[in-house]
Length: 233
Image 1 (tube, helix red, strand yellow):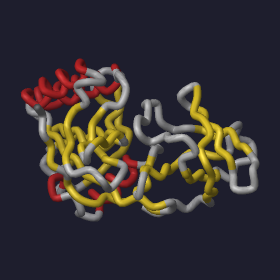
Image 2 (cartoon, rainbow, N blue to C red; image 1 turned 120 degrees about the vertical axis):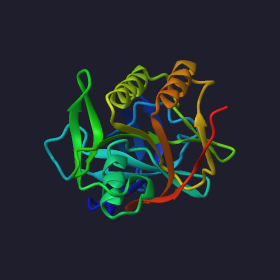
Image 3 (cartoon, rainbow, N blue to C red; image 1 turned 180 degrees about the vertical axis):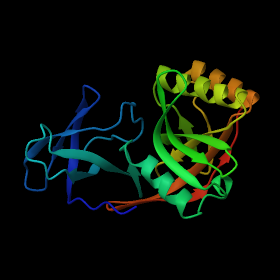
C-alpha cells in the first residue's frame, strides 16, 4: 500500500497522554501531532528518534499531522494502527496470503458477536465464513515479535468473540501484522499481559487460527513481507 498523503521528517521529542506526541522538524519548529497507537510502543520511541509524519491536508482537523513511522536501528516501524487492516485486505484480494485464499468476497468492519466489529469478513459461494481480526504488532526483542505491548481488555474480548464464531461453525483467524521487517518469530507477551496470553491459548484450543506476517516498511509504503513462525511457550 502506498501512502498517498504528503509526509514530513522530524525528531520525536516526547509522547504523552497516549495519543499525543511532540515532534521537532528540521527547521526547529515543534509540532504536536496525533499518535495513532494506544500501546506503549516499547522499544520504538527512543529519545530523538527519527520519525515520519503524515499530513492530513485538513486545515480543520485539530491535529493536522499523524505520527506514522519511527526508525528503530536500521528499520522503519509503522506505528499507525489504522493502516494494517487495509494492507491485509489488499494482500488477500491480490491472493498474496495463501492461508486466506479461495474466498469470493471480502468485507471490512462488519458487525458481529456482542457489539463488536470484525476487521475482515471473508465469504465463499457456499456460505462459508472466515472472520479475520488484525492486530498491529510493534514490539520486537531479539527478533521475537510479541503482542500485546500493554494490557488489553479489548484484545482479550476479540479472542472470546472469535472463539464464539468457531463454536458456531465458522472459521476464525487472529492475524498478527508485525509492522517491521526484523522479526523471525512471534509469541504472546505473557510478561506484559498474562491474561491475554491465557486467552490466546484458550482460543487456539477452541479452534481459532493464528497467522503472523512481517512487513516491509518505508516512509511512503507499507506491505506484507513474509510469514513468521509462531510459538506459544
